[in-house]
Image (tube, rainbow, N blue to C red; front, side, top):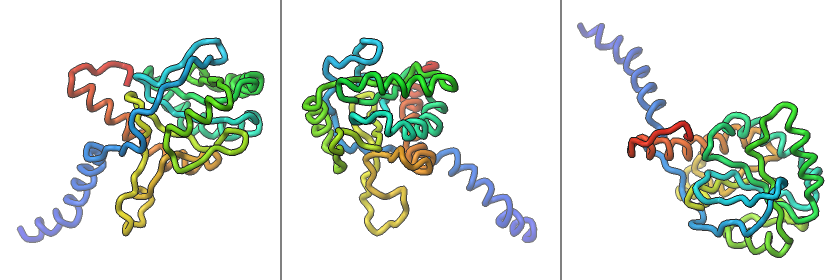
Length: 221
């Protein structure tokens, strides 16, 4: 009898514990709000002449700057690591804010992705430099745009227009999961496939759980 108890403790119990925590970890996690209730876009037009809104959409938000083509490798990284995996969700959009006049370069980026990607979820919207500065400033982020009004970082904005990320409250904990993080560097594929993917899954889980709770689960999420 004692031998069976020892064997259970050594082999079975760890497996049960692993399965429990692996399946339930996200149910105890919520991605913190970095900046609440940010402003929506203005009457900014996309490449197809339509307006885009942050309302009721999970948005991966980027700022290309005026040198859009110089950063095309970053969009390729984001496309491969995040977009292609999740773009089928109707409540998800990828939006890149770019200065007016950079439309031709933005179109070239879309055209380069199109042969191997359904680009229907990619959106470039265009605004004046002053409008971009004002919009970015009200996000209240620690990072800054460069002189071309761009950044290699992208940000997660939820359906209620809250910027989400990691607060890093526990300064004693050296774990990367406990660091302050407001955005994800598209220049580094490993950051997208690790930190961003982890946080993105939490956001999706939140909405899936809410839909399930309200008995309104749909194909959207």
